[in-house]
Image 1 (tube, rainbow, N blue to C red):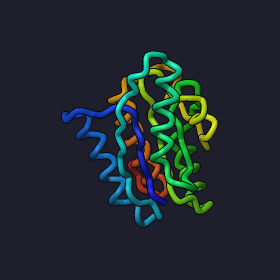
Image 2 (tube, one colour; image 1 turned 60 degrees about the vertical axis):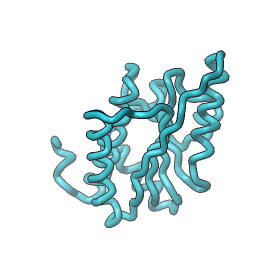
Image 3 (tube, helix red, strand yellow; image 1 turned 120 degrees about the horizontal axis):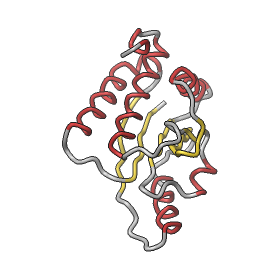
Length: 161
């Protein structure tokens, strides 16, 4: 199953981009033994629409166009469900075991996601009720994907790494 992080917004060169890339690289190296490949990032520009709902809808359409057919879709949203890292790893494994072609994790722009993308999601996930800066969310997604790989493989990283 190919893993994609699809994000509205671009990370500039610097420590945040480096850290996110380091976690995704670790996941990409360990993933093939578990049937997980890629760990690629797709960055999209923010919409320039004047109205908030129009921006959300344009960004949702752009994100949706990069999600492969048959992919499981995880949408990050502060209104989503919080779950443990173990439960997230279990969902990733279930998507893989169900024969899903890909797993796409969608990170929206400053205004959040359009309803069409939220409705299409297999999982609407929150990293708690707080609003997080885009740079930190990208790092947290990358780290949780790596943590899921380690949990699925029985590696001890998940116990405190």
